[in-house]
Length: 432
Image (cartoon, rainbow, N blue to C red; front, top):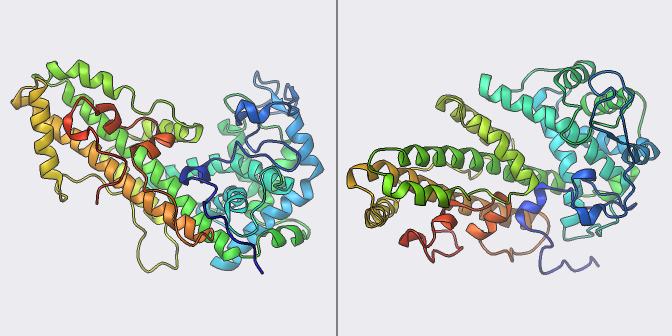
């Protein structure tokens, strides 16, 4: 008889995106130096100057010797986890030689594996009991994935959705070395070149010898469920990126409208309120926002191409219908006219001249419509994740501004509350 699933899923939607606070069976955090201070307390973190030739040689940023020592002790089992994931991906897709896009998919699978094991309803792994091999595979893949995702984004912007180039492990290692991707903001990658190249070989091609998969197969008896979980987690990631990018574009338009003649009575007040938007982001969301800040300057057609690519990246090849996605805010959607009329009245009451308020009304309306769309899409993703993890029905409340703010920081509706009557007391339930 299978154990009864917990009535309350032990996670929230955006917990799927950041494994850094979790620890393995030896007590090491998956996020290493990026883990919260309370999690790192008492964990050996020996740092030393990097002796490897190349971009890391005697760099001012140190390398984490303690993490490297643990990985060396579990190297073969760690490569087995990565080999199992790549092999399962190839068997399901029929892919032989892996393209850049395939690498991105394999990296997503490996990075979502710890969360799947921790959060699933049946036979979840307890916190602090995650095998070192799974944790170490996650750490390796997160490093590789940073470069892969940057290349995928570049490919989407330049050429649209497609397979992307096929690279050899040697070519990829040369690229990360020459691009400085082995040097982080606080530490350099601790792996010597031979281990990095061996890991890349397993990710991109396969091991030179044969690796056993007994341990990882026992941990993941339902590979289909694991793949579905990764697909949904990936959609959360891509939707988060799209939301960050679209919201920064909408706020940029608000800022430009506040600089127009006649908007002076509101400029200081609204600018001050909206300046708090995004404060207190989680580390991963801050990374998204950083990337979005650069991409928001792209021409509109390039942004559209990028966001269209996100939809394709998040789509399961077996799906007959495209997944629900975060659309660009439309001022023609139901309820928009009423929203704009309320905003217009509120802005004039606050002192804005009617001649200058039209553009500002449209810009603020886009922000609020975008929020509503995000609440709807993220709430749907939460329910789908609950289902695929084995929870009979979602017990999570629909995500509103407060739920989204936990990940994205303060939202426009929260900053404008009390200033504009239409957002005051709007609650957390996403509008229909």
